[in-house]
Amino acid sequence: MNISELLEGTGIIPVVVIENASRAVPTAKALLLGGIRTMEITFRTACAADAIRAVAESVPEMLVGAGTVLTVEQAVRAKEAGARFIVSPGYDDHVVAYCVSEGIPVIPGCVTPTEIMRALSRGLTIVKFFPANLYGGLPAIKGLASVFRNIRFVPTGGIGPDDIGTYLSQPYIFAVGGSWLCTSADIAEGNYERITEFARQASASVAHTKQEISNIRITP
Ligand code: 3PG
Image 1 (cartoon, helix red, strand yellow):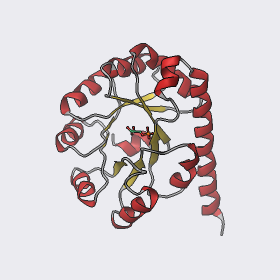
Image 2 (cartoon, helix red, strand yellow):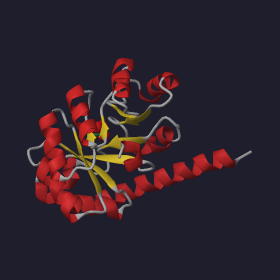
Image 3 (tube, helix red, strand yellow):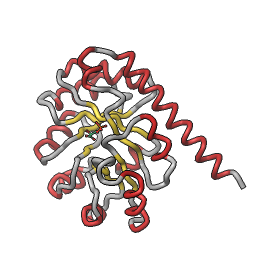
């Protein structure tokens, strides 16, 4: 399965940093309650693999992936823990080759034409664009998309709730990523209702944008 088969239409990929694996399941449930069915648990903390395993085993409705995967060793651990997809901040050919050979969907970070061409040469069509706000945001992505017609982007970094519509209304945007839905502070303090509320607002924005797009398409 490729990433587009797995995550098509998802709209938002929350980037989640879990400091204590016991927080992973309640965070996943809080997101689900708010209508978000995907989460990327980052390998920035020692408990990332345990957190992924806990969600994969206890919250099967949640499509859990691994983020900030920098090495093949982390990709292996992520897969063993039950990650359904892998996200990298940059393009590492070893990580991508491993994921492709194992059939695990992967979204590498690509912000230059050269990196995108590497991803294409591995058969990928979805890439992360990170940090989106610093690498030129939507205008930069639009420039790249005009050349790479089959590539879609997941802008992440500096994106907030007010940016969802602007990004998702463009056909070359696959989804947006961000940590604003479940901040480290809210997770650490157990503010799960707040996470659900942010998730609700975000899923409402995704639904609204999809509706607007379909209205534009059917308007003669
Ligand atoms: C990531 O790993 O994609 C970023 O840390 C998310 O960026 P944000 O915190 O600005 O949303």
